[in-house]
Length: 171
Image 1 (cartoon, rainbow, N blue to C red):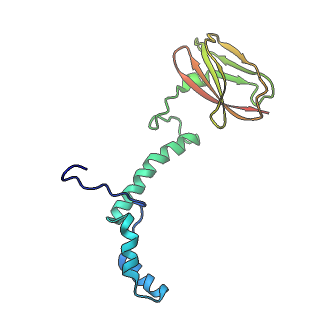
Image 2: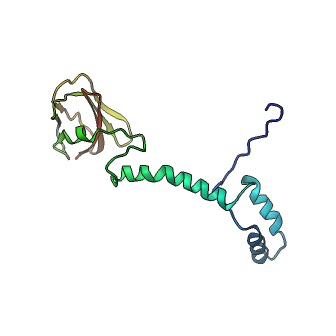
Image 3: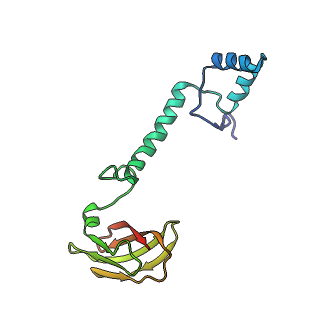
């Protein structure tokens, strides 16, 4: 640390605050001691500048970050422009994946004058199980190489560099 630099205080629970007088009185009443002031001081070591304003600002920040992402993942909004998901819905509606669910090969078809450049298939854990580059066609059949039953995500890159992600169920 340089001269005049204050140490960084780690905060274990910046969302936490309480009324100190009520805390001390409650602790003393329930414990049958007069140690409420000491316990209050010890509890403040991980959040020394606690306040309702600071706690509410922290909670608002977390909710402001999470809420749009949750709405996007649950499909409650038509666009996910504020969460860093750039999805071309016009191209997404032109992609057909069939049969879905399937226990056989997976067919990909694109309409609208574009071609499929790359097809990647990821399992539910995020592991890449198939990667086919240089497809350059409007139709592609991904052979089922004994994929385990379960949920998969097909990531399709198109000739215009759009990237579309679709769910695929394998029986």
